Image (cartoon, rainbow, N blue to C red; front, side, top):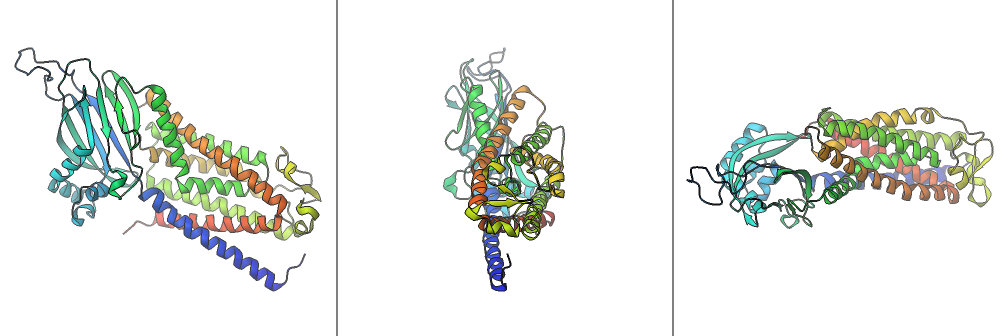
Length: 444
């Protein structure tokens, strides 16, 4: 079917407007998803048995021999900490490790007051006395973090339980929202990990059962995928180019296996790749897949390669005609094999290897988001696996919702489907290219 010039211009205009709208929304997305949330990292460990007095009897009853029963290292985003402590701009705008260390020393009392008012270690129901022993500035995924070293003196009878509570960076401060404190602890003979949130801010030894711990990491994994726009856009780009359920299953499985491997290796500290390398590669992967989708849609519309041929628009009842005259309806979408008469494209042949390669990069990104790089342990391994299961649950949920909708749209409105998916591919590609440049060019 031959379209006149006005019709072509109208369609191109609609595609451009749709793409521009999606770009505007998506470009704003990362700022909300990444800059408006924060994670705090805490390592908490007991040092002596609470309530054990010095053999000389000089220590007071209920006090440990050293006066220090718990040590904790807290890592908090530097600029966010300085803003939350209501310090002047010269503090939170300091750039470079030396300048930030100087400001931490200058405002140590204010920082200490802010943190100790919102992070508490208690024993036998009574708060332990905190003392700030040292400060440092460390880097986590290319972001400066203030690292605070605390000691806590606790009093109480032996054999009782410790409690750790975090209310750091609450929503009410309006700087960030949904802050999570990731705690690794070794207290009262227990070792484990926990995620403390506004709705569940406390960890108590003797009560933190394995199921609760794993449930927290499952939710953490689900949230990191759901609110991570780069990974969601990559998944959507894969879906836009998939015509059959078999294609979706294959690419989703390949992506899962690939990112699971590098995720576990990186989170366990066996593989280390700087975020400055990983993040641009992730953005570029989205652009590559979106570009392949767009090329396939455009080629299919022009040459009838089995996607949307010119004859597709003339099929009665809204059915889609594949190359060779084979009707491609919902049954076609559920086929396991390639329909007769449909040619295999270059992207069809290279889709799986490309997805595997980019999945490896995405796994490093997931590990960076979790922020754990500790020695191997069964507890850590289970937590990481459940975190990964949370990621996969959201991924499968997106596929379960999006793929049937796309299949129905292709069947009932093939013209609209083609132009809509082209607009979506253009928008995703432009956003990904923007992110790639933004992540390659240093800020400032």
